[in-house]
Image (cartoon, rainbow, N blue to C red; front, side, top):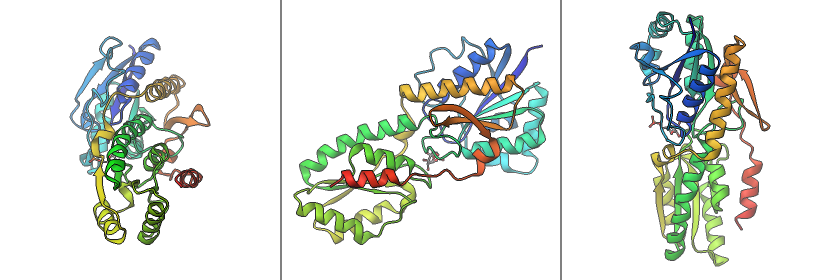
Length: 321
Ligand code: F6P
């Protein structure tokens, strides 16, 4: 009987998840596995809900945002007995390995499941936040950066016309990876990230200095984890001579067709995930390290804090004069 791989997409969706589902399915099939796609994240294991994935059924999805398996934040999976139910579902369907496509929270779910199941657990990092330890980049991050940059370039037009300051809030949960890269790429006047606390007075001083230099419009990129953007906008308006507007980019950052880079990462990560399964290795997460696809312990990927390089912020600040 063919061995079986189960796929789960879990947590917040990220563009490129479909490309990863496609690649796990096709590489898996060519290695002789049958592939089951559990639906709605971990809930699919609690309810035994899945569809059989074939090379044909994953056709035409590489360019689609979201996840064809749907996803869920699943607190029910943290309830007593839930992981055991998930393990029974795996056993009942003779699942030999699970590929979990998601962020660190999803990896923690896989770690717990791995304690109760003989199935191999492999994590494939996919989140627009790019905050997973052990990988330089996650699937979906590049797409989210490009989506935000495209929108903020438009905001820049109206900011210049009206000589206004715009605070633009991007996602990223408690980390500043997305804000930092977006800020760099749109030429932000100020970038606010949780990893680099900044006082209101300093932000206002930069904007006032800019106005004196003849730079009356400006974009301040703030990570959602930095603080209350609405209060920030009000305070900056009060303390500077400028008109200030707030734009929260929101969930648009999570959708849309994945960029070539997100599709490429998804395909390469998925291929390595299946390779690890073929080698009967589990409790690992794949990732990109110094340009090469690599793997690390799932436990580390799930629980360790990824370092954010503040040198990028320094460069962005130098470029914003
Ligand atoms: O982790 C991805 C992400 O979009 C974060 O940037 C954001 O904080 C969070 O998910 C929003 O979660 P939800 O979809 O549960 O509102």
